[in-house]
Length: 246
Ligand code: 5GP
Image (cartoon, protein in one colour):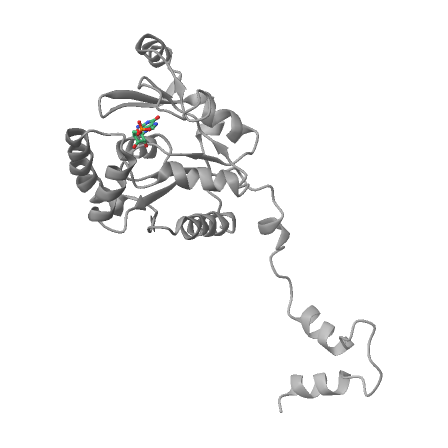
C-alpha cells in the first residue's frame, strides 16, 4: 500500500452515509488532483449554426429525404432554390422551388443574388444567397440539396459546410427509381444515368456518404441525424464564413 493509499484509508469515515452518499475522502481526492477544463466551455456555448449540403445523383432520393426530415420536425431552414424549369404536377412555388423566368434568373445572377448557379439537364438552377445567409445569421441550421456540381461549387465557397453524398444501393436501383418516377423520357433517363455514373466517382470528395436503401427512408434520415448530432459535439465547431462575410 502506498503512502497516499494509507492516507485515503484513514480519511474514510467509519460509519454513517454522507449527505449525497459520497464520503469526504472521495472529494479530497478530486480536490488534490487539480483543475480540469471547464466542460461548460464546450457543451453550453451557443453552437454556431451548421450548413449541410446534401447531394447525390438525380433520382437518388434527395427530395424525399428532406421531405421526411421536415415531417419528422428536424429543425432546419430548408433552402428553396430558383429554377427556370417547368413546374411538375404537385409542385408548389416557394415550397419545392421558386419557379422563375429565364429573364428573372439572369437578373438574379447579374445582381449577385445567387450563391451558386448551374445548368442542370437543360434547365437553370440557382441558390439564392439570402436563403442561406439569413437563417445562418439567426443561428438556424441550414440544409440544401444541389446537384453534385453544385456541391463542388459550394465547397469552394464554403469549405466548412458539411458535405454529405447520398448514394443509391446500386446503379440498377438508381435506374429503376428514375424509371418509376416517370419524369424523364428514355433519352433523358439515359443522360441522367450516364452523369450519375460519373458523379459516383466524386464520393471521395465528401465528408460523409449515406446509402439511401430501398424502402428504408427512415434509416437514411437516422444516419443524417447521427451525422448532425456528431457535428454538434465537435470540440472545434465548424465556422461558416458565409454568415460572417457580408
Ligand atoms: P429536378 O429538376 O429534378 O428537381 O432537379 C434536377 C437537379 O437539379 C437535381 O439533381 C437537384 O439536386 C439539382 N438542383 C436543384 N436546385 C439546384 C441548385 O440551386 N443548384 C444546383 N447546382 N443544382 C440544383
